[in-house]
Image 1 (cartoon, rainbow, N blue to C red):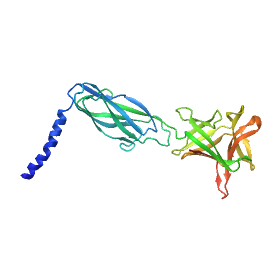
Image 2: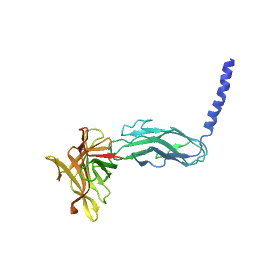
Image 3: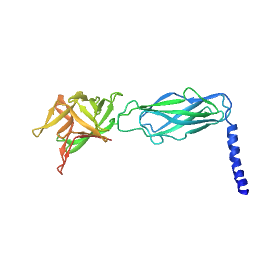
Image 4: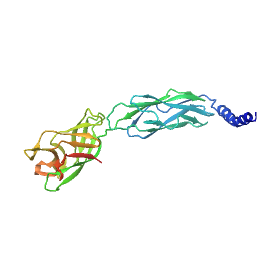
Length: 288
């Protein structure tokens, strides 16, 4: 009997707290809803705060339970999308509270139209408004975009040996089907992009002899050379490479250069080569 009394005494404060908590619920007419029914975020976003706003009279606590709703991209709850607190308590007089969400949604694929939704699942002390669900649309990021070093063996007398040149790849538009290749000469070459059958792998095609800027007033062309009968020969054929794991790799026997045809000069020309150990090393764009 003594044990039962002691147990009841221990429970009493908890019961009183629970009762007081319920007694403190808002009795005014109020609604809670997301500030926006739909938003856009970049794929590389790692954290997100979604405001929930209170409208109407708020004279006590409002309790809101949150859940992840529709998801068209195979995101795993509490892994790819982690809501830090599913149960929110809004004190009297407070007009908004944030749903904090941690995100891990970036990948090496170009996947358009991905989205997920976060919903108000249950409310105490108020009712859910019309914006009870917030749809989050993901603006895709191309894994190909960024700064690169074009690396290969110089085919000029100077510089000699393996060298590299800085360049940048930038998407033309949101279709991600074309890129601009910029060597800092005031212009850019156009690159065609095509997904291969392999996950995270893309084929890049660069037309030869594109004007990519000027040097001392003369046009600079992105020139393609290929090995023919043991010699590097200028060609009008496009050059193709495969992007995978942050590297664009071209076939052996190909070179790219920055040519100034008007003065029969070069700002640089690098291509594939065989190293001292006899290994074949292709021309590459290496992401920085």
